[in-house]
Image (cartoon, rainbow, N blue to C red; front, side, top):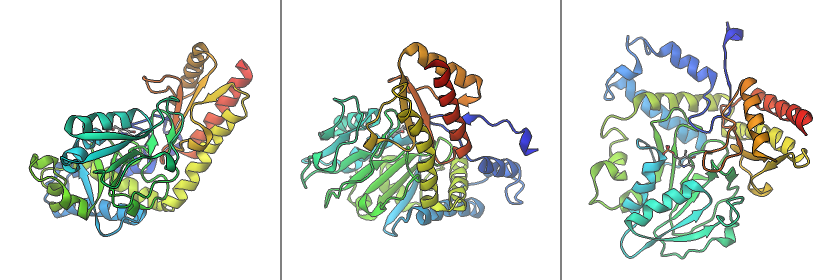
Length: 365
Ligand SMILES: *Cc1c(COP(=O)(O)O)cnc(C)c1O
């Protein structure tokens, strides 16, 4: 039966590939979840059955990422984009300024929301070189009075990724990890708040994961709408109102899958190998493929490259489609090509892409 399954070689940037095993388990359980005679989608979010799913997803994340006990794990809605507003709403008080490191379109969007709500400053920016690199840690400029420092750990559109993070002392470090969460080991204790839309490495769209240190929850402004306060969700274990139950269930299955793969360290090694396959083709192509990111800023999750002419790019994308590859076009704002190699993308898909790229160069080089 398995041989008959048609699965795309899926390099979508988000929503993106999910592990086949996860989809199959969800399929099995969709009509009757654990003998309840109901789908997880059909039951009360106040039921014991659902609550176990909710808490297990949190426990798995805590274990996999080594999240210390003094951090809350929240499941919110509104995507990473609502976090762009919630963060300044909660933590940007009058008399303070919030620092943003600009490394791509998403950090620009995060800054724009904060500018609507208070004082901000740019702690560093690599816009000038069209976001080909991540700034070095000594380029960052901020002082200890900053409300917080915001970074985007992986730049989904430009294909760059931070490989080390700043020690910000008393300034809370806040990170948008939407496109590289759970893809590599990180020291959570360096961060005051981490957030990620689920639809890249964690599950389906509709859930936003927020990992937030207790003292920050308490420090947040209280005179803002209830649903937009982190304290509301922290106090109620993300069950103040109806959470996106199906998405949280799927996120739990994905976390379990990561654990079965050997955990984050093992997934990281696999991600390194996957990305290497494709970067090696780019580097050995004598300029037939042109990588966008500087080598030491390259992302393991989004590999961005161009071909010499737009015509050749078009041909590349068309032929890739014919061969069963999906999602290799770059983001509409920058063009070119992009292969997103998130956790669930199998090594086999990356080998197939490497071979396709080599073959395409042979025929067109
Ligand atoms: C996809 C993405 C977003 C936007 O996420 P939504 O959940 O659609 O709001 C924000 N930041 C980064 C880094 C992303 O990759």
